[in-house]
Image (cartoon, rainbow, N blue to C red; front, side, top):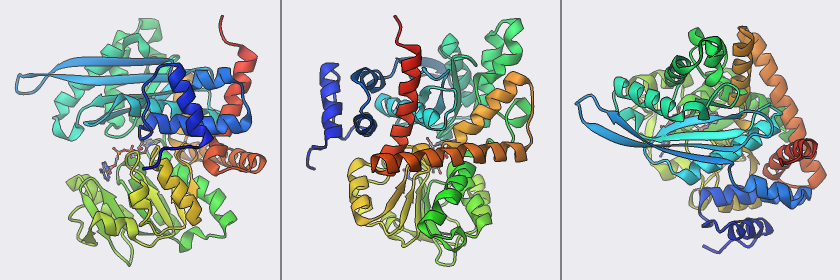
Length: 441
Ligand code: NAD
């Protein structure tokens, strides 16, 4: 593949060389920082800010010894990367996956900094990961692992410092174990507010109404704002979806309520298709029972190639990073790529799709609903309040609408892609805050 010669890649290369950091153009962190620097260059921000954003503030790595049910011991690798906290406490999910790598966690933490700034939430960006397949360990092993990880994180997390949330392979139960472990270590006078250490908790234990569906719900609000501008009626559209976990399955259920037709789904167990539409609720029940979309009887099994080439209006990746690469993009047959997952599109695929006229709705806008309702949960925990779902949804809609307006205004001002506009709207805010605060000393 041709080396990237864009000014953005050159800016990233210059900074990496100056810091004597290893770089590789296929590396997700290099790609993410290149996109962010493209926006920074368009805005004309000073070099100080570009340097600060180019590397995370803290990269923490652990090796956790955990006893398994059969009495044997295993060592698990974990990461917490804290990218930036100029806007407020670090905030970001914790992922459990057997193939996580430090650079992936760094990229996701940088994207969290951008996402919180774009939505104007009082948070910085972080991300964590544990190298484990959560499906391959028992519930008691998962609990011991989570408690050991939380203890190892110690004072590197806290409701005023760094607040984890669910991500790929983690859920409300894991957040409950994290918060409970943290509370056990907290001073007596801080035990009430200590549960704000994690968001995405079960409702009974300080979670927020509407948090589980929040990422999907936020995406629907973004579509409500943007589709009419593209002369598209959501009730008349078809779509395909990668991933049927939290984000994918909620997006599907909420789109079904709008009348949008799901034609094809792919997850780690296989891909399925039905020209007449796939029922989102029935598929969710099947996935809850069997662990994946494979063997769903009301649709036909198809190959991955057939999945990518299915003709749809919206193509929605809601699984892992880089699942839309150039090879897949060449087969894709959609009008709009709606990024529900973080960093699902490689830069080569993005250039190809944009040239083909596909509209790309960037992840830091589309999936900001999750962290927004996490912010609401954190706020409710601090104030010992519980908000109704209608209140949560209404406030979420306001945040998403304002974010969309910010992005459209920036795209118009800089005459740039929506991705660059998202990053620019975030960077401009961070720049203003650095200018007010200064950089210590
Ligand atoms: P999840 O663990 O609930 O679901 C992940 C899905 O990805 C599963 O359906 C799994 O089968 C699928 N998948 C995994 N490997 C795959 C492969 N090789 N091919 C096809 N599918 C595969 O995770 P989630 O919370 O739904 O997160 C999905 C994406 O959304 C991630 O990028 C995450 O960072 C992002 N995100 C999540 C939230 C949240 O609130 N959970 C918020 C913002 C962004």
